[in-house]
Image (tube, rainbow, N blue to C red):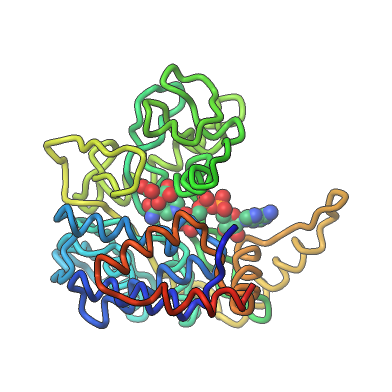
Length: 371
Ligand SMILES: NC(=O)c1ccc[n+]([C@@H]2O[C@H](COP(=O)([O-])OP(=O)(O)OC[C@H]3O[C@@H](n4cnc5c(N)ncnc54)[C@H](O)[C@@H]3O)[C@@H](O)[C@H]2O)c1
Ligand SMILES: O=C(O)C[C@H](O)C(=O)O
């Protein structure tokens, strides 16, 4: 059974932990905001559940809490950023801010990032340009846990893509998804719950279908989006490869199996020597009015959304717009609080002890009253 916490409690706890590892106030707030947005949006795989993983990165000296994030190459519409081994949770929003400023000046901004780390949910960064009437796009490579179609080798990360599009009266369109059949974080949730994985998400060491959510740690792997060749895993493989090339090869970050493992990832071995610097991301912002008056576009987007919402649904189901489930979770969790599984509570309790924070003791009572 999960325990429910107010998002402000979790946000403050995460912020304090980031400060304890040496982050500035500004960086700690930014990093905590990305994590808590994941939990609020119902993406339990990438919120507070990952906090201990970022601390672990710092403990093994893979994370610089005081990075000098700088532009190392640029044109009016593009830049390459060196994240100085900082938290991806901070480096990616910094890069997106630069992309937005470029788009404000010349219509679009594209920023490739090297020497960064795990950036949390791609959707957070992709949504940043929305308030400027811009389309946002984000992607990142990640620890290699995914096989290319027909392979036994884990050469790709779960490499997510997110695209956020502004609207007039409807909530924005926000597609935010791993290019693997499932994000590894969802396997971690099954591991915490002691549950099996449905077939089609992982394969075992021999490349056979498996129900074991631990497979990526014991010689097996995650499958690309599509699961197998018959069901179009070659397209998931291609999408994951595109993300890896733009995020890794383009800026000079590591790519493929050289992407450094995130501390809690299934694949813990690091392939050396590296072929680039750290983990890579790619972000972009496109000003709508560089193409068409923003108001016209947003009205058409509303029409697009209403058309899809009105589509005839199969019995007992509803057609959803990408971003809708997360927005519904956000509204609900502001009221109910955020459910945290026992294994995650335990990891947070350990952090509280490690950093001499009193958070969990104080909040258990309040948490109970929210259920
Ligand atoms: N930082 C990293 O290295 C990394 C790697 C992989 C994934 N992630 C993050 O993990 C999170 C989860 O990814 P995932 O692939 O498990 O997500 P998912 O499989 O839950 O898919 C989510 C997307 O599908 C949409 N969606 C869900 N149901 C829908 C429906 N019925 N109709 C229309 N759209 C629907 C959602 O709105 C969302 O855009 C994402 O936020 C992603 O960015 C991060
Ligand atoms: O956990 C990782 O290494 C990548 C990502 O966050 C995922 O959940 O797939």
